[in-house]
Length: 392
Image 1: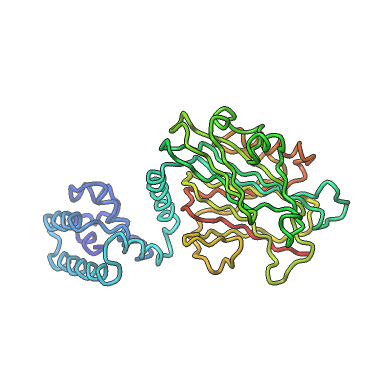
Image 2: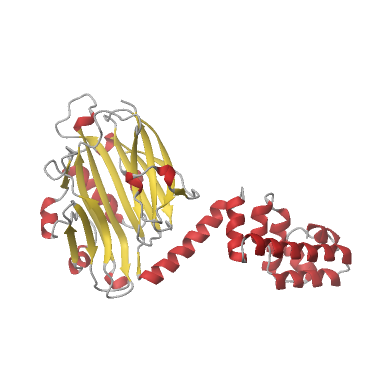
């Protein structure tokens, strides 16, 4: 096809010039120019126009006097391409996906497009969507910690929630949290304890650790919230049916603390602190914020990965190597000291909630180093994982 372009009078190389020279649609001209200039053939072939569009291009080129032998070569190549599609993919969408995974360029753009399409499809099918799902890990010394960093005297404050959670069907019951009760009496294998950050609010909401100072309290109170606890300590929090669409939109945050947050002795078979944000709700964004106090035991640099959890396994209790990794379209952003870099465009309530958690826990925000990962249209179900090597 590049040879055909060379033989058109004026040898147009830009989409606008090609569209004017052949009197063809601008979109078709754009696809052809991008195809012939792609440095990676796997990426370029994803821009190949359909059969009818290619025939329109070839007939227009023939009218401009292009050598018939060059046009015939394109037609023969298309036959070979069709055979490739049938033998190795079965159809054009499957072939485009196969080529995308083989491409060395354009993977990010293709992945983002696929994610956005998946978000629209899944939210329409299940009847729920959110502007953002948020998860924050805040690691600090516990109240009884001394001046020296000590893993046994550490605390993790975990804030999670949704911004703009919308139900699109009135009968929808949606899980907003799955966890496991952690306490010394209920789990003999662990001495860690878990407590709601706002005990009074948690008591009013049947044990759901809702933070009363953040979110849309009116809509949250209107919603029917149910927490169930099984015999093994597994916890499931649900939002029951209620108002739908924007009028029933929910913005809320929940918070718990876990102590100690770090193991006293590092197991060399698993010497990394793994922080996981799992997405099970169709959302426009998954926001994972990390806050580390300057007086923590030493930790290595942050490393980011993204996995699909299709199949039902839980990333937190399995080897990440057993999961299928997804193309990373994002990176870890260092947001400096304090909370100023954690403003959330979808919700001003979020930053106020983090500030109130710090105040309630007597934490000086200036002692915290902040990091953020924003996953656009997370392909549910998936898990974003940040690892930091524990160095004590």
